[in-house]
Length: 158
Length: 158
Length: 158
Length: 158
Image 1 (cartoon, rainbow over the protein chains, first blue to last red):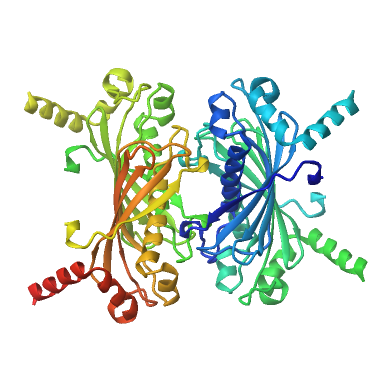
Image 2 (cartoon, rainbow over the protein chains, first blue to last red):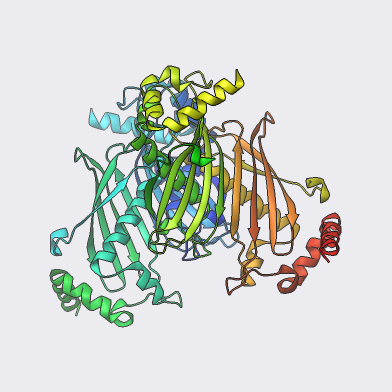
């Protein structure tokens, strides 16, 4: 399914901090959810959807869901390389997926997804296509295959 | 499916803290993952599986996966009532589910699950039945239906 | 100096969470700073200065400084009893002090202070006396000795 | 006072994360305490006192106190440049100081100090000079002025 869209993958590095450890001697699992956000924001920046601009336009992008499978433990000082990519985008809702690996060994530490939407000032879903057309255009330009898929879906529904 | 096991549900209250808010003016989504842990630990205490005792026995119980659907926003000062229950238990692996509601209005804020296992000192899966038989017995006593289900599964596989 | 004001001390309990531990096997020191906020907010509520109302009036109350002396380690599951009190109040600036003790043994875990001010919407210091007179009056009523001290200071300066 | 020891200052960059913001729209003050740890660990690495090695030698280095003056607000996305240096070292106890500035504008955001000691496996103060002589030697070599000061103090006391 993820092959539907061109694989614009970004690599993001997070170095595991001491304050992220717990008494099991490993990184506490809740921090991976925060690293996903770090990686996502860096990725959106790169795609031309900088989160700051989105918020300045009065649009917020809350998290609808997160899902994370922990595959191996991460330790203090480890550098975790996060492959992050947009796996679906529907104008109002989008999904991001993540693969977190130890930078040195390549060992898979976790794989995860998160789903998000855009909400306008009124707290209602905001259609990026209408309210941030410039960003939307950029998005479509970067993901022609994704765009095509969306067109088909729209026709399919018609 | 959750009716398979007696519904030993515990209610756990978390009051949303100022330091848990973000600049969207809501509680940051990563905190729900931490509240799940708070509720889970209180629940395990109540079931007679106190986490401290488990760790003292040289067994750790890492998180294998988390999944959280955010249904409505939570605000600073809100008291969140978390219904937590064991939804499956297989001796080595168990799953907990959570429903988080606003205490005052009953509004559903999030529903979530987490999966866990027990690992011995050697880092290998630890069978609670063998290594903490007392706790295991208590578990089975409290969840006779769950026990029955497990028996059936074992026979079914045989 | 703290005897200058009536000792309106409040006790606030925080139960140390698993996610607050670090790989030293103790509660990470940064969490005490968060507990100070929890205790401060509960205290301000009780004094009739609920933080929510203050923010609704367009006033924020940032932290100017924190200082914490760690006296003994705190462990997962410990219930920490925080004595919190207003140690000075000058209309624009106030200082809170904290003593954190193990609830069971009474052992002193940390003693700390924090300083704060009130800022209006324009980002400038906000005089609570003028902008939230009701709250100010309540404050003065609760701390007659503090009020007296402030009067003397004003006269002294005149 | 800080001139007593050669000014081995290290610069450490922390980029302020979204999950570090609060509903005031700024970085929550408790995070600065965590950044101090990030900077301190990077600094100790550079000095040849890598925290991992210290812990592997069975020695822990708990925080005795922290003190932080917040001078200006930090916002999501800001890159904070932290000047970190050892301001005193007595074999068992040491103090680190920090200046946090906006990388772009140079504006001072916070200045802070933290004090630490070394504890052996028995939970008692550990004299690095005896228990980690290699590290101690390296330390003295890097801080000849600090060494000299310590010699004088010892003589002074004799």
